Length: 390
Image 1 (cartoon, helix red, strand yellow):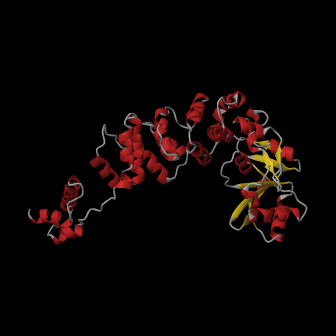
Image 2: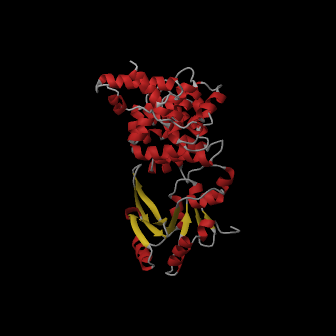
Image 3: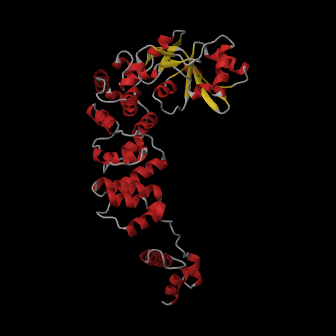
């Protein structure tokens, strides 16, 4: 590279590189940080690889006064923490046995062997301290051409870890372009049933990344063609809704994709959190009117909150794709309208002589309806006067 990427010049990174070099050990960065650097995209997490054994890495870091966490010693990973920067360091390895979820590994000092066990060519790129690239399987070319390829035999790669099926479509959504690799697609289709062996947490994490892509639709269509969506509990995807200019909110995208489909089983299979489950199921269960007036929008926003309001409007928009202007106006309501607080409480009614009980609740509801009908202009005294006049 003509110049070093910014992350490689960080003091924390330089400290780590110096710690390895001063003790005669090699360290190279690998995976997403290298891939996204070459694509001129923001770089997040830093992952590194080294021929040094995990125990050696732990001792090396501690001798350099670098905090070291044995986050994954069983598969060779140590996390170094320097100035709040966390860097995962994994010993070069090769898989000796896989069951579709877990792998038994053997450490090696062969960089190409380490690269060969990775999933895609674009994820098997390494960069050293001087910014030199090491590319054993044509990953740079695939990045330039937006081609997503498995390393070696796609079926073998998938059988090592069935999550790679979902990763293929996720990376296709974020880094690929048509046409998709035919061998990869055929392997995903042939091995789709293996998805049932994956935990819900792994499915959720991978699918939420896919759904957060700028345009997940092409990848989702390919997933349906390969029988993958059905394995995930999505039998009737509502693609038309994803043509909307909705924000890259994975739960909203999932809600729109499911349309009117019963999502109870999916929420359980994907191990959604309680909040995610309530949002998804509640969003799909709420009735959609044929038309939404400004008054109805205000009432919904006030009662349900901004997140549920936006989900409701986007679902309505999906059923009324020609109503872009109206939907856009509705979606701006949280910014242009400050939600008022109903000014009357049960304590106020007690002061007016209204006894506690079911009758008080009904009376409060009546007053609130009158307040809403006035477009929230009736003040507390006017509302209470109506009670005194009865």
